[in-house]
Image 1: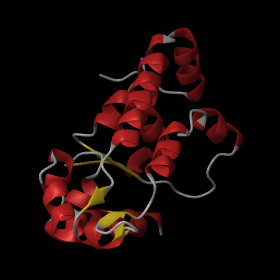
Image 2: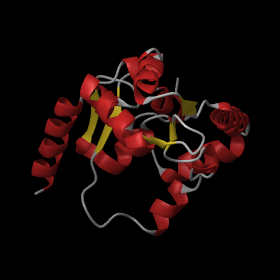
Image 3: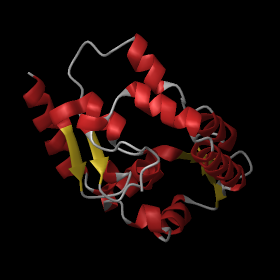
Length: 178
């Protein structure tokens, strides 16, 4: 279910969204706690393996990564890991950087878009099984992208799950904007 009371384009406005967030403090608190929990999990995330084969086996066994197209997982393993000083391989980026990214997700997009509306067409592709879209609702994205709001089979990480289909969808959106 959406966090927003108005989940269709005709009934949505940024003012209504802001009023909803101000009047319903429970939803932001729940979302904030979920993001904090996610950040803590990231800090505890494994970051060292004996070799790239072990990395691939590890991630292929995780439900989120198991949905990825095999070549995408191969590319992630090849590009996302480096030799570790103590031997073996480790994540190319630090867990602290990833945690900082999640801890600094913008929470003022409504105000930002009101003060600086896009001066170009906007497209938005939402995964049909995206937990993130269910938590945040689709009204703002629908209002922003208008007829270029597209539901696409997959999770929040649909580009990794269906890269060729995603590329075709992006190209179709770009052609529509031309």
